[in-house]
Image 1: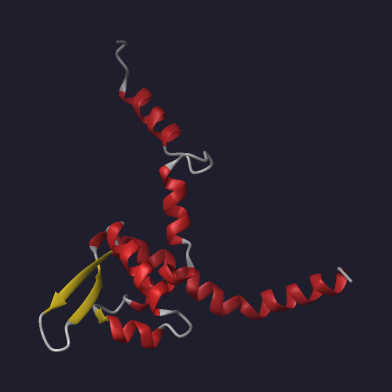
Image 2: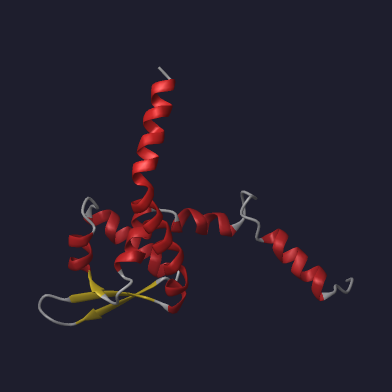
Length: 133
């Protein structure tokens, strides 16, 4: 077996984790974090832990099934922790992990950009659609 330098190993790692390659695991991660519910949940958890019921009230339009699936996938990816407190009824809280907190500034910036520039996007759509007729 040939000996590789540190630079060669880093170059191989960069090729192995190239999101433009279909089999790359980073592509699957990008797919997950670009999901609208994941993005909104990250922002909803920015101020600290929230109960499941609080998240369902904040996230209008999300079904219980999608909320549960999104939270489970985020937990699996290490972005949130789920804490169950024995009570009647059972209390379930979700909180961003240290890893989830590293993603938060990116998602907050995307949400802010969307809220700031929606009027420009809507105007561009109107122009584009008018040209397509």
